[in-house]
Length: 262
Image (cartoon, rainbow, N blue to C red; front, side, top):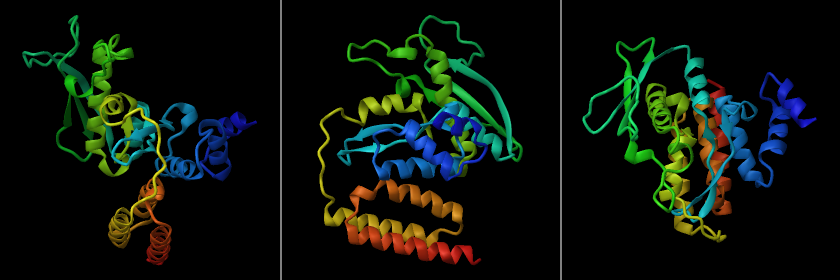
């Protein structure tokens, strides 16, 4: 039943979101589900087509698990295409230690870098981004390349470069959206697989968030900008004290009413 709803849905409505929650977000909290739902509505990417994934990672700075929606490279391409300004790409290139760019990587050892060049209809030249092997390649604890990084090295690095280039070419539409290939290295270095400790937010932490979101809400000029702020608020819900969170919500409602009246 749930899969039928997803497969037959052409629009992202409440019925579709509920089906996604039941299928892809099992065991998630209400706040986590709400965050993922907001991201789906904002990006219009679909989990059943493997354009976006619900994931949770341990954030060692916040000392808690946080929802980190991950998109596929196809999802990023779709976001770019929907702008109406995407004009494709030039072929990916790779280079080794010599710095000579090649259209095909045929060496036995992994490339040192990959270069992607995205074209926009309103740009005179391609927007170029380079992904370095040492910044993205994932290794096991034994020091060997992990998973597909050991089997499809040039392909994996190319995906990272392309994601960088698409975000740079379309920053408003793709801000904060990262691919699995990019986040693998972040998972090793930034997120620690330790026991989760439920900690209450400190007063200073909550007040800092209140001040930050007060400024962001006041500067928001459109419903789209406010929707993006909603995603941030939901992801930080557990870091607010109740009174501060209630104040942020009231500020948000007031600003939304003002924006809608314009």
